[in-house]
Amino acid sequence: MGRLWILKWVLLVGVLGCCIEGLGVNWGTMANHKLPPKTVVQMFKDNGIQKVKLFDADQSSMGALAGTGIEVMVAIPNDQLVAMGDYNRAKQWVQRNVSRYTFDGGVTIKYVAVGNEPFLSSYNGSFLNVTFPALQNIQNALNEAGYGDTIKATVPLNADVYNSPVNTPYPSAGRFRSDINGLMTQIVQFLSKNNAPFTVNIYPFLSLYGNDNFPFDYAFFDGASNPVVDMNTGIQYTNVFDANFDTLVSSLKAVGLGDMPILVGEVGWPTDGDKNANAGNAYRFYNGLLPRLAANKGTPLRPGFIEVYLFSFLDENGKSIAPGNFERHWGIFGYDGQPKFGMDLSGQGQNKLLVGAQDVQYLPQKWCMFNPNAKDLSKLADNIDYACTFSDCTSLGYGSSCNNLDANGNASYAFNMYFQVQNQDELACNFQGLATITSQNLSQGTCKFIIQLASSSPSLDASFVSLVSMALLFTAMWL
Image 1 (cartoon, rainbow, N blue to C red):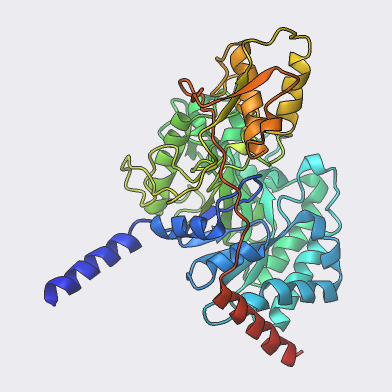
Image 2: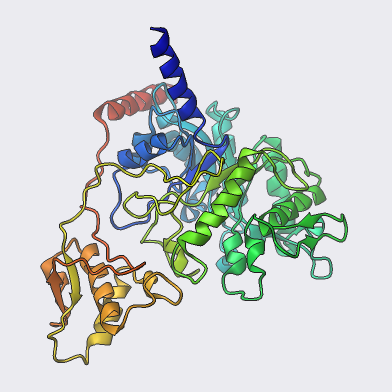
């Protein structure tokens, strides 16, 4: 009996110690073939992940998270912010997406994300006038429903909402962007009043992307050869993450809230779609970040614990590539839930693989390839363009994993991606006689010709549906 108790204790310590305190992941679902939500949630459990950030409040995802004890940040997409400007609509949203799941055995909701990076410069001010009213209404609706002490509304913002002046480009000189300084001041004051954190997304990779003059090592954590010195404070910055974070700390201090809690909603490194996006650089980035988080090192202006959500858990082949081809490759796991590189979520620096998805169901072992017997190649370019438009050819780009294929290989890759998206429909591997189906795996080197996941319609656990129905009935009785 004693030995059995010791074994159970050792196993418990092992599970609890396998993930850094405060470390979470982003779970995006913009893919044309998705792993079943229960499979993804089991991956969270297997890897000791206790915090998850969503980009919606999808019923199938929430159903899979119910009863797990995993802390969840649900989200209101940007296209719903206008509607949330109506307080009654905000109350309805809280009832459907918070009250509905807040019961014994339900979902442990901790935050509501109001929008996602709504003040990006590329949005041209589309959400400037609707985000703050939506934030106010959602938090007030949470307060009215009795959740205000435990569930906080926040706005995940891109790091472009603050900067330092050109003449003093140091973290200590950080200020909110001049065009939104007044609005940002209102938002942070409201967050502070409700004891909610400031949520920021920081991407050192984007500092490198498209900027060959950016010092490469400064994007990582293992020591830049030429630290950047803040001439106002004398602090030496050896990486862009610390400098970026401290620029935010200074911006908050400038509006009288220098001690406000900061939550990093997204941080990560992509593994394909750019010359700097690969598994080696991703490993280097995380192998520097995670030990710092485990040691509660913090930053020069904000030492100590930082709550961080890695971006992202899974690759998403349905994301827009307007920012760059890398957008579909942020996952620490591939589209099929298999780990891409060694990663130690305990922050101890061990080069070990995460636990991947179990019992994954794939389509049959068939690929679509360029037909070597094709005679008329005049329509080849048009057919490749068509295949790539309706699938994902981002791995073919410059510096990407399939960049070294020859012309026939490029055609085969494009045709196969379309074929897999179409669930291997034979008609999807014709392309005016330019393609043919093969049982030979065409993968070569770093370039993987994938077999897509077998389609599966999401299903909800019957007991969970019953509990939700009872919760809704109980809620309605008190409205």
